[in-house]
Length: 116
Image (cartoon, rainbow, N blue to C red; front, side):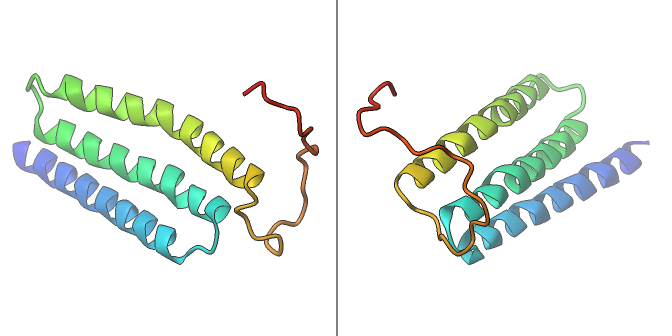
């Protein structure tokens, strides 16, 4: 049984590492900030969660599993907030390519909007 769990843990870590590699390649290859948000949030978080699950299976019964769970939860909670703030800032600073945007649903801002 231990050998089977070690193989499953190794497979999860390997697949998670491939997702992280895909996210890194996407960050380099995509043309603008809005496009880069997808690999930096979704793919990277999914890869990290797979790696943490694999490490948790490998460390079964150890007290360090609590830290793995906390790291996964923190990443899962913070990633959407990070993506929203980066996307919003990029839009406001005109850091996106207009030829890639098919529809702009954000209302124009007032110049006196200093609430944030």
